[in-house]
Length: 321
Image (tube, rainbow, N blue to C red; front, side, top):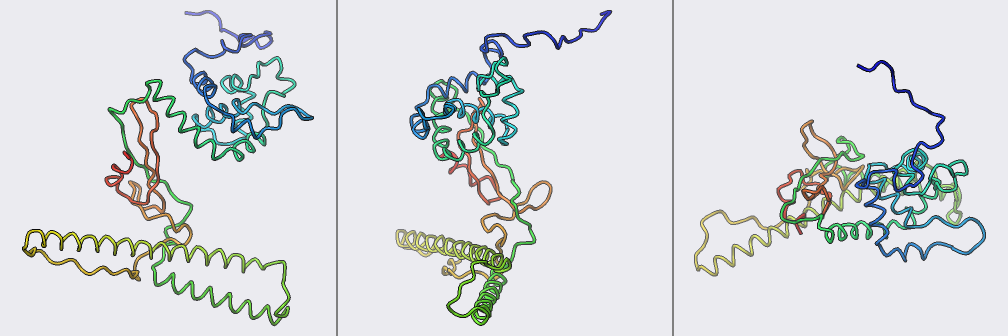
């Protein structure tokens, strides 16, 4: 049994090795991220930087890109949290090259605004980088396609179940909003004159326009669904006729109904988030999406998608493709 406590010495001069390569184990993921980014062609990223001008030189795109990949892979999304971790966490400090003895100056730690601007400026390029990461993983032998796993999870949308309305109700709301807009224009023509323009749009009119756009989007979704159902019915009838013609005999089962592209007035769409759908989960019904992911045994994500179909069965072919 020990007879004393091991007390920390907070005044010792070096808490970490002088060489930053010794800060973390050799197999730490931070080394993988830095090495992978070092192999990438970042000429498009670098072309947007202003080098050789007055002021401080910009941060290297390779460093900022490695920082974002490392942060996002650990579930850190906040740019302010990333900046804070660059001053406190050994992995983040390793990426930005903050060895500690320069910590007082703080020039080696990117500000959260720098991180935000880099992400916004290179949003489309970063999508290609993630694809390139997969290619590197494949070349390194980390991706083996002999076994993969596909699963989905329900994700709640920023919309309420109560915002679902039938097609007939949506049509009534659209007509009512259009009538309100017509009445508002007529009233303002009388108030300001037909040729005068008021630069400040009333807040209720702004909200009404937003609501009208969402209502029309919901209506278009229902019309697209009805048209797709009619197309599928046409194909079904054509296939039946082709089979009967090939065999020379009529099928005994009931003949399919003629396709009807009109919208069923009882079908529903969400007027807050028209793209979302009603999905059943283990905890009840939610207004949201079914997020899909395909991963390998090495936990490398090969594909991701989002659908509003509640069942995962029909997602297999598409996700494999």
